[in-house]
Each structure stands twice: as structure tokens, then as C-alpha cells.
Amino acid sequence: MNISPTVQKKRESYHHGDLRAQLIEATRQLVEEKGPDRFSVAEACRRARVSTAAPYKHFKDKTEMLLEVAADGMRRHATEMIEVVAPFPQGTLERIIALGRIYIRFAVAEPGVFRLMFSWADEDQVDELLTGLGEGTYTFVKLEVAKCLGRDHITEEDERRALMLWSMVHGMAFLSIDNKLKNERVGDDLEPLLADIAARVLPEAKSA
Amino acid sequence: MNISPTVQKKRESYHHGDLRAQLIEATRQLVEEKGPDRFSVAEACRRARVSTAAPYKHFKDKTEMLLEVAADGMRRHATEMIEVVAPFPQGTLERIIALGRIYIRFAVAEPGVFRLMFSWADEDQVDELLTGLGEGTYTFVKLEVAKCLGRDHITEEDERRALMLWSMVHGMAFLSIDNKLKNERVGDDLEPLLADIAARVLPEAKSA
DNA sequence: TCACAATGTTAGGATCTCTCACATATGTAA
DNA sequence: TTACATATGTGAGAGATCCTAACATTGTGA
Image (tube, rainbow over all chains, first blue to last red):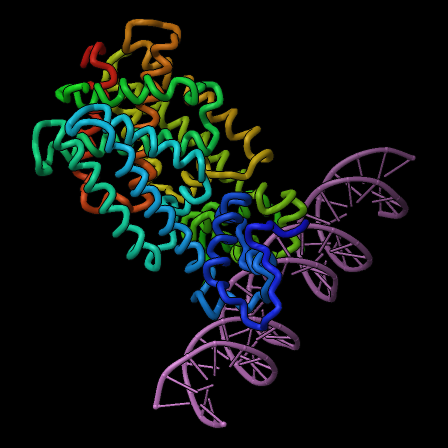
């Protein structure tokens, strides 16, 4: 088992120069390759070619390394969602559908990171940073829903509709990455399914 | 830290008598208390008052212990779902709503087991048993959907509708146990939300 | 320049999973 | 009942992990 060239780096000096960033990258790769549970600090160290004690100069513990990867995932996820609605006119179903599509695509493309972002029971340490990031993104979604219903501020009704949509794509994302949809080939039919769902939850919205 | 009385048992004989069952029960308890990731075989042994080598006479490895708990969860989950529709007439939305309610309640009541049942990336060993059990339950749900739409066998359209419903409750279950719904008090409003969702996905169904 | 902060390493403690050899109980056949 | 196989426990220990402590090397600001 040799080292991935994207992380490996011949080091002639005692100090590393860029260890923190390289450890995060190694962590992200390992979380994808092995899953968040099977990630080990020791293996990330091997990839970055440092001793197993080195990470503790940069991170409090293993959890903090994973947290960094999760937070980065949240930020990229949010960025993607904001970018993906841009081509479509405000208040249209197309924007909602695009959000759902990218949500599920992210989960399928990076299931390890997606799991870290959401399904993490690690109480206190995680909740501060991640829920902050998550709430920001969700507020953006709720505003999109509000605009579909002809408003420019979020009402309780908008929150109800947004929650239905979020639950649906979130559930579909997890069912996909947990391999529960073998017989219901969702990959092919995802697009019409998303459109159908969006229309059922937001029948009032105009459609382009 | 003392031992839970439900598992502890004074043992005067060399042999245990009921170790396998008690280990499974200890595993289930620990999965709930600490989460599936932080479960350790060693601690289950302490609770059952046996050496750390004892479990390997009954289980291949740690994964097999967890698998046993997950499979038991699947069976109980399925039983609950079958029982909960019984009071309502066939083909009514009430049955669908009852299914959604019990689905989410199970997740909230036993988040550790629920996570084991679904969010488990442990490839081969798991997929055989658990997906078998899961598919059985899902077929039952699909049949309920079909009956709501006036059929007694499952069509592609039924599968589409069932998938929407499953995704929605599955997503809501995970968002709940992952504590992502702090601001959207779902606990109180779950019932009307479920009814709303069911009506949107199955508008053709009669409602009692 | 030179003390000090930053960032590496080595060594080791505590814990964990799992295996191996051995101990003890239980059941079955003569 | 006795003898032996099988089932099920224990103790010891290999190998891996997370993390800390003490020490080594380098970069930097007064």
C-alpha cells in the first residue's frame, strides 16, 4: 500500500510547511475511502508522512480533524446550492428542483463527507459550528420556497413546505448512499421524480 | 460506573448459561447509550461479567454483534408497522399516516438502533441479512400505497409514490435524531405535517 | 544574536479487537 | 458410571489505535 501522490510530498526539512492542510485533505480522502467510522488518525499521518503525534500540534483530537472536513463540506455544499439556482428566474420550480438535484448529487458524490456533515451524534463539539453553517443554508432554501409562494419573507407555511422538501431529498440522499434503492433505480428517474415532488409540495409555484 | 441490573447476573458456575442473549442485549443498550460508533465489545463484556474473549465463542466479530442488534431492530420495526395499520380500514390515508408516524417514532425512540439498521456502510456482511428484512417491510408499504390508489398489486406508479413517502419520513427521522430540527419544532406538529404530506402524495386516496 | 514560539519526533500508557492455548462444564455412547 | 467429544468459559498477549509527555529542530521578533 503506497501513498497517494496528492498527499505525499518529499520533505527534506524537519518542519513540514503545510501539514495542517495536508492532514485535512488526507482525512477527507480517507473518510471517503473507508467511511467516517473507519477513519484513523494514524493512517492520515502515514499519508502525510509524519509521526502519529504530529496532528496534535494542529488539532485538539481526532474529532476536530473530522469536524474540519465536515465544515468544509458544509461550505462547499452551500456554495453549490447558491450557484445552482442562478440560471433560473426567481420564484420558479426550476430553482427548487435544482436545489434538490444538487443536494442528492453531493451526497452521492461524497457520501463519507455527507455522512459526517449530518449523521454525527458527537454532541457538543460538533453542534456549534456545523449547525450554524447548516442553518444558514436552510434559511436560503426557505427563502426560495417563500419566493415560489409569492413572498419575500419566510412565513410558517413556507417553513412547513421547506421541511417537506428537505426531508424528502435528505431521505432520498441517505437511502441512496446506504444502498437501499437497488430495486428502485433512482439514478435514471431522479429528474422526473424531483419535478413531481416539487410540484406536489409547491403547486402554487410558477414553472418557468 | 456500575453495572445495569438488567444485564448483570451473579454467576456461581463457570459457564454462563445465557451469554449470547445477554451480550446482544448489552450491545443494544450500549448502542443506544453511546451510539454505534462508540460501542465497544469490551464494555459489553464488562456488563455481562465475562472476559473479553468470551463473545468470540458466539459471534464472529464485533460487526456480527452489531448486526444482530440491527436485525432485531428491523424485525421489531416491521412488526410495529404491521400492527399499527390494523385499526384502520384498507386503502385509507389513515393507514399511511400511521406508518409514517411509527417510522419516525421508532427512530426517535431508538436512534442508535435505527442508525445501525440503515446508515451502515459495512458492505458485504450487512447487506445480505438487513436488505432482505428491509425489502420485506418496504413491499408491505408499497402494497398499502397500491391499495390507497385502488389496486391490489403494485405498479410502477405505486413505487414512485411509496418512494416519495419513504424518503420523506426517512429524511425526517434522520433530521430529527441528528438534531437538525431545533427551530422547526416537529414534535408538536408532526401529526398535521404527516397528514399534509400523505394527502399531497396520495390525493386520490379516500380519507376514512 | 538569541530567547522563545511553533512544529516536528520518540517513547509509552491506556484501551481496544481478536487469537491461541488452556480450563471447565455438559452431553452422549458404551 | 465412565470416557470422551463438544461447548463455552478464562488468561495472556499481539498488533493497532488515540493521545500525552518529554525532547529536538526550526523560524522569528526584540
